[in-house]
Image 1 (spheres, rainbow, N blue to C red):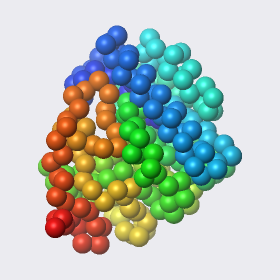
Image 2 (image 1 turned 180 degrees about the vertical axis):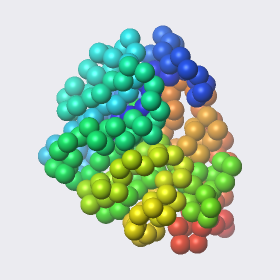
Image 3 (image 1 turned 90 degrees about the vertical axis):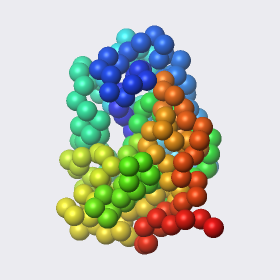
Image 4 (image 1 turned 120 degrees about the horizontal axis):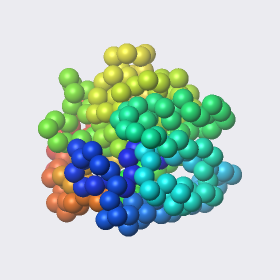
Length: 234
């Protein structure tokens, strides 16, 4: 599932989301999604891959959907902004036959997926996986990991847990407090720290299009271990 605002301007708080200047960046992001899909489909010998699109309307709706036409099974283009977390929850509700899928992978639609990302993904992960833990402001929320909320891998057995959650940095904590899940049910795709916003910190796995792309990695001397919290390399 590719969700969130598309063709966004650089400022993450800006209300107007469509400019002609954002076109090339968003199209590049969409094409990187197709490259990722085709890579993992071949690598894991997957019989089929289905794509769901949840975004806001722009003058480029038809062009955006055409890129995914080989894989798309459903889409919802909202006429007004409802917020990223609401789009996340709407997408989960909108797939009525989700039990037929082995996993659901939410990825924000304005991410350009770098090639190293292709290599770290394992479609056979048995637990909920976030891309990484954030370092910006803090790496924890009340003692629980502060997650990077740009993507979320959900195996079938966890679908019932991912309903009406607030998709933000607190998800790990919220699932621990509000459900019977434990730390054994959640993990990260990589054990290095990366801020969710690639304009603030270098990210080797993706960048948000139509924003500044930071080239300095501010947490390159730290790694994450969910059993002990954060640790330093060397």
